[in-house]
Length: 105
Image (cartoon, rainbow, N blue to C red; front, side, top):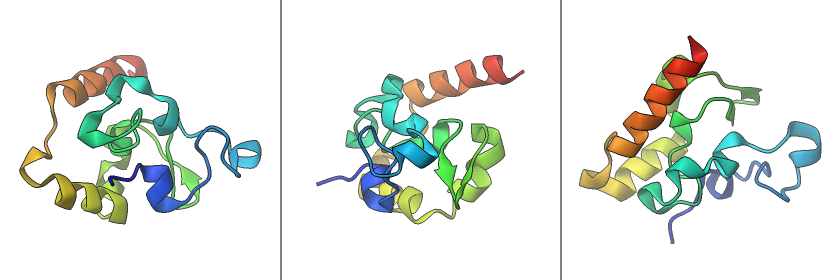
């Protein structure tokens, strides 16, 4: 079974998670535009595209600001390995990045 980032990282920031009250709900757990991407729920298997995720005990910025860190993330590399040839910036991911760049300008 493919895990979402919050299941893999055990961060507790998914809706109803144990750390929502002190850290808030993770945007990847509720961003539905990428629901089903790489077999995940909401953006749970494409969290590196979603701004404001919580990595390394701090909130991360936009895709462009955080992607270098994501490339060495154990979860990101796990998804890459699991998806093999299916891992790419799909049209849905590219669309999400375009929208983010319009918002953050």
